[in-house]
Every structure is written in C-alpha cells, then in structure tokens.
Image 1 (cartoon, rainbow, N blue to C red):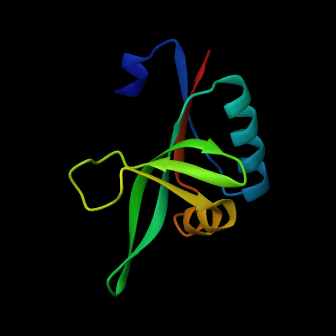
Image 2 (tube, one colour; image 1 turned 45 degrees about the horizontal axis):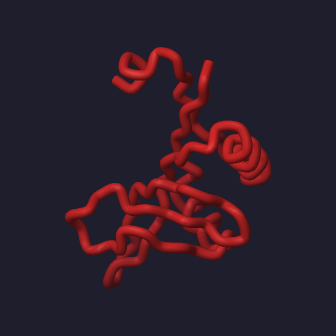
Image 3 (tube, rainbow, N blue to C red; image 1 turned 135 degrees about the horizontal axis):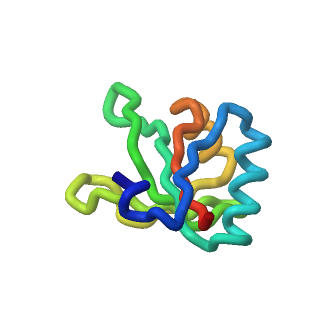
Length: 101
C-alpha cells in the first residue's frame, strides 16, 4: 500500500547489523530529515511486548513518538541511545524508512 501511495519513494527495511543500521540512521537523518518507524520491546506488568514507535531524532538520546494516541504510552518520550538499541535489538531491528528515489 505504501508503495502505491508514495511511488516517488523507496520503502526500506533495516538489516540485522547494529553498526550498519546506525550508519543508515545517521545518513538518513542528515539527508532525508524524516521520521522512521521502529519496533521496540517494552516491559508491561510481567511480560515483554513489542510496540511500534515513530523515531524522530537519534543522537545520544532517541526521541520517539507513540503512533497510537489511544493507548497508555506517553505520546513523546526519550530513551538513551543504548536503551533504545537494546529494545530495538530484542525485536530483531525491525524498522521501516522511506527515501526519495
């Protein structure tokens, strides 16, 4: 569906290499200046759940936004980069970003 809506853009997914993903993120932030979507692990009660977040900025802290306003997660939140990377790794670096063709 995204490909049909945004035919001028490529829809990309991340691989399983943390260092390569960080390189992609830094380049993407510099050139595209668009948020991207990541799936991260989150602890709830006595379990770990996977949640989608919109990533707005990655530096020494990662600025995230909850794409679901009707749940109990804060709309905007920050994580130290190492915490974000661990939670992202637990979800196998699942993420999507778009780039201009």
